[in-house]
Amino acid sequence: MSPSAQGSFPPGSFKLSENTRLHPADHQKYSFIIFTWIIKINYNME
Image (tube, rainbow, N blue to C red; front, top):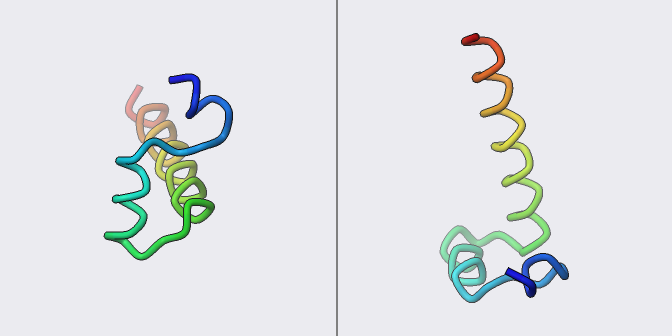
């Protein structure tokens, strides 16, 4: 967990970025968008 907390990506994230042809920065951006989208859905369902 400490490497992720310091801003580097675990090997799995690099493979995911290669498979989706996204740069690590783009992967982080889309993860944030998906995260906020899930929060909005959960908030609307309550």
